[in-house]
Length: 362
Image 1 (tube, rainbow, N blue to C red):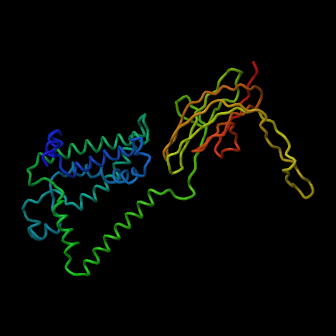
Image 2 (cartoon, rainbow, N blue to C red):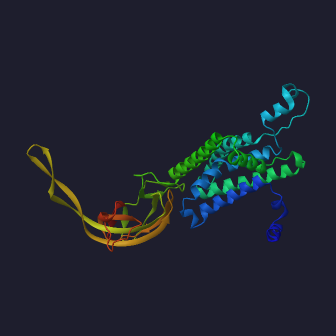
Image 3 (cartoon, rainbow, N blue to C red):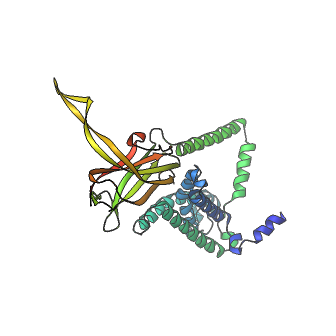
């Protein structure tokens, strides 16, 4: 006990005086930041439940705490103590709100505050991305917590709001361990089992990826005059020794953290008639199918990255073809979590994108 007290004294005085409910909100904020940014923790499903609790409850709760620092009474208690006549008399009534109202307002204000912060970020250079959103929400939570704590400290001790943990524990223990009848005890046990089952089902549905929706994507972009990434204006004509520039993009929708290898190759191709593949046009007439065959291939560069689920990766790539002629094909082959063949081709992966370039022989 003495060691705990000594460690507690090491904390700054405002932190030691922080109300328990506000301290719990800061703890949740710290935990969700660790779950989002820590290299090892962010690869676990832990950040999903923590993120939901943080986004749907914490910002609204600290905002309500800043608005209503004083304690309040439930409407039932007011009516029992004051009576209907006293409620509308000249007697003073506390302006605070009770615990149920706080929880309801916390959810409602969180649903309002989080989109508003996202809207503001949309007009900033950082945009709506994971890191800016976490920094903005965490800053809002810390600032609102400081205001709420300051306003509570300015009130007399008997008027400050405090979560009645002791009363809740005593009431719950009496209801569960000392029921009035056996039927009440059985109903309490069934209620607890139902809550545990519901939480487990919801948690499993959130954490487990839906079947049939795991995929990756690779694509090409370019940067326009305003610095925006667009799928247009690709380099299609180069001179020998000249390089073209594109922005490579990878999206991870595998519902798990995945290691990616992206291989850039250049290919010389020719079109041949595939005698074994024909199409019937009208009855007896048969039309041959043309097929593109790679006659020469050379690897240009490789990229490696690791992405969590729903993360994207962009990188500028300056490629310089060594082959000359019309229709030199530049192909980017994406291998998610797989061993890359020594000479990879489009037959080795379903994720690839290509660009046709005319390279003039100098």
